[in-house]
Image (cartoon, rainbow, N blue to C red):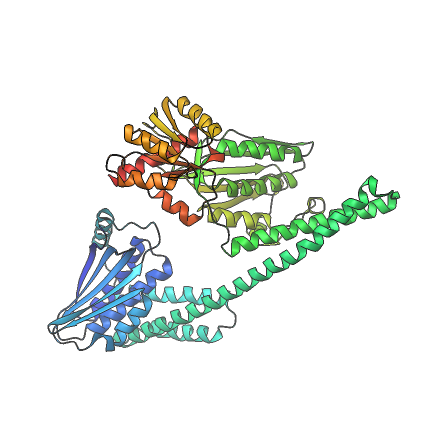
Length: 585
């Protein structure tokens, strides 16, 4: 229910010892709720500041931590007190806590008051009663650390922040000096715990303010670099295409005869221009990925189809003594962007072929050990990469020196670009290699359990196919009948509405671009009709949907790209569509 708060921790603040407990429990709950390391420290510091300031009030002070979803998932920190505590907005600790969180609400009454702070949780974090119970039990079972352990942990946090600053910004010497001074203060806290802890908290607030400023400057520098790459790449493409076009004209026999030396020189110009154009195109791709212009269109994807395309495209590239082996995948369907997945695999296989003189390059896929990831492995028997270079190959433009480098070419952008695309798809790309024995690159993607093919998906029952293209309807009929389904067809919005009113089907396969009412309007009408709201719908479309539009459709229907349509893909989409209407009911 929206707006419901689920309490996971409560503490009555009576003195300085409770300030330590509030800080420790705040960090512990933040970690269990799914906040990253820096946000855990922000929550702990906010609670420490708030409880320290309110502990001196004459009345009773209570701190609570809850999970909420009003309107987005968040951690809710509430401080309530009785009696006359003055105006809470004048308290320095309240203002400091507000700066460390995403929202602050202060209320005052004659018999007390309250401060409510909210810290947004990352997407996907659960705030349901079961999650609240798990966090509550974990906090209850853990032993509060003593003051010295708390101080050691706080000192460790500050040391980590110092290392991050030194690595990112060499010109932040003043911040480093302040951090060292703060660390020296932490080491002396065993003598005067209360006074030194207050000083440390103020230092942390100032430190995070400067960290935010440093992050802003780094982001601006990165954006400037990306704009530079994109602009320069665009400016270079036009003259390069002209050079390549003129080279082709000169090499055309119809354009006039060239002597062997002239032909050789023109071929050198053409090859150098083609290599430079390839570099420019890779620069553009990397610039787009860095600037966030690449958005993933996540759909159920037939992995066997992607592998077939990969095999047909790159097998002719393999050398005479190198075999490209693409094994049938151990997973029928993966929920991902097929275009971006194809780019990643082409890069990985091309690299393997480039650096393998003899042997094989092998591609295989299957579920990971825990079943929550799909693993695609590309292994070769090539020259391998020494251990000291295995992370550097993911740096842009970096190439390992080796005896194949002179003949292999390349720009050093393939692996960095592939890792960026893997992150956009919600996965990761890892490398294992041994010099002289070859390299294995492992792409891990979310398996999305519960949305794939499973028990009870087939037979499909009576299926209404809505599409104005007879060829597409024929294709869908063959796929559905292969899954023991019975097909009723409609070629327009009015025809679809007539069939729906006559009898509710077991499943609807719906194109968006049909004569009005459109597929979007038909879907909206079904969800508003109690008799049809529980009918699962799979949107089968060739339209290039924006990420926002795709998310909007995914609230009530599964979405499949027509280019990826196959039996396994449809089975996975039907499972997702049935799960959606099951949750709604």
